[in-house]
Length: 383
Image (cartoon, rainbow, N blue to C red; front, side, top):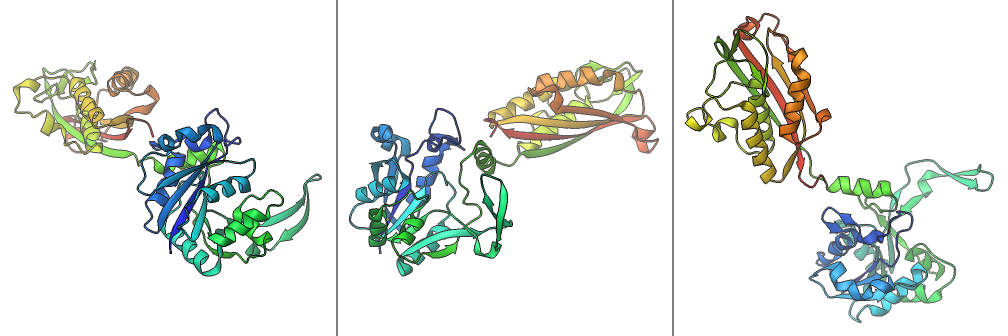
């Protein structure tokens, strides 16, 4: 048995709006059309692909689809959906005896779903994947917005694509013509063929509205990267107390190889950790004379450069400075501004808090200062 796939991409997606046809919009680095074609191009059971495009885009077809492993042919869309499918069927080579018809606006069709449709179409002649309705369904008097009846939810299933047909069944269905149809299964029904329903896939969404596109892009977005950091230094006389380049007046400051800026050091570790790029000691060793008395803000700036080279940006930072005294609240605005500048992110994505340790341990006795930090990174393109 040979299988061909018709990818219907002949419309413009008016409900989505915008000058670019819906199927050509970007979805995680590839167009919606390219992702839909790839689902079938990568399926071992599919031998031929036909892509139906708007007539004005036919000459650009190979460039719009990109390289494929399977032979890929093109057909011009018609006025109605069934006309587009008829054109796609006419462009399908003679070999395939089972034909799948798929909406280009469904870029997440999975292998197992395609398998189910192929098997059912081969056995029964026509098959449609569908998912059961979850909500109570009402039939309306549309003009008056009044419920005419409540339909048993168990009887309502929501059709998806790909829909599959033995070739002769699809040919007869599209040849029968008639009123406009929203899918090929309804054409087969009109032509007298029984259509087998197979389990659809909740993930096989159709992109119709701007909200759908946003959801689809979110699905492909990599999870945010999260890192934590911690630093502690003893407080000694004769050292400045510096937090993110802001000097806080006090008789003691942190002892360290660099300037002992616990806030910047903790955030540096969090940033590096979120990118799995090591830690502050690996990059700025306390045995390396280059970092003697180095400002913590400078080390943080270098760490930001490291993670940006790996394709990340700072999505947000939350840090807590633990210090018995002095109070750092009067300096937090300046501290946050310095951090936002170096982190290259908006001020409202940088949070710094001051806490005491309630007299407990070395920090509580005023002998040390500590900081905890959490950093969240996103990929550099913002997706």
